Image (cartoon, rainbow, N blue to C red; front, side, top):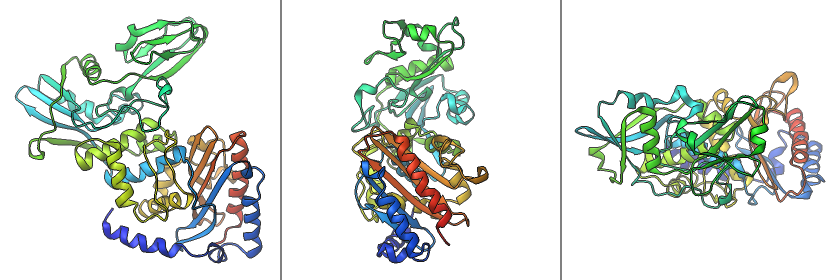
Length: 447
């Protein structure tokens, strides 16, 4: 995104910060505005916790309605909207696969955070595997000397190390940094993929499938044995030597590792490939935490050569998103961290920037669609199966957020952000109450 665009957008934002009630008159009558205010601000469901709501007209550049929209909330997976924005702004549709340099019979490789390498969900998009199979060098060496990050994000739950939603970050991830554990029938053996891990499975007293914290020893108990069908994905404990062994086992090639520093730009090359929208859909619709983290690492590799989440976040926050009305407190790509803090107003304006830059048909195809896809597959269904909500969910314990785009009955698009923290009851109560408000807006908002 150009600095000129940022300056223009900053001016537009200042124009947005006008009294909200006066801006709503075009889209709602005074009576309707009061009814909306009552629905949101006097809701017995929303009052059980801490709620905020922002509604924005991207055509007129005005906030239509706001309630506690300048207050800070923990966004959970709504953080992925920031990650998507960063990737769209920095990668520009091309993902860095690997940095490399050839020295005689040796191919030296530095990972760029590419999450699709040998990933079982992206077999048709793994350009790096296809490229490596054609490389003539008999020896491959991996290095992560340029990796300046940790395996987990800041503020993550360290005791979630064995859950599939918390894969370890890496410069050179392989197989999505996870192990598939499968069993087709009750009497069938348990299989691990990649097969490299098959002899690292042991029986324990605990009933469920798991992993030892500090070693790649995977466990199963009586419940897994009795199961008629079993399919789980667990993180493995990542290391560069393990990545080299997995490559050697997969490609039947001599693979080693070292700590070779990244050479000067003139002595290295960066292999790129188109970034598939399929990856963005899995990020936004399935809320894939691993893809979110690796996308930020790829942005860092693209911009700096070195890989560091904190550094690329600082660039996006202080440069591309410097004009937001409330500064964002952002620490990871996925939203697993409770250290993230955003306001509904700021999140709405990030969504607005995406709406201004990406054709609506493509943008809405990437987000979950109400009643149809992803995390909204069972919620916010439109009449005759036609979705009117395209939005990202974000959920942690006592937290639920929904931010995205609302299409009215007349076809006009508004941007919104609903954020709820410290909610003690069932999340479905919040979903039902939000559905009531959003359905009302779909019906009553005027062009």
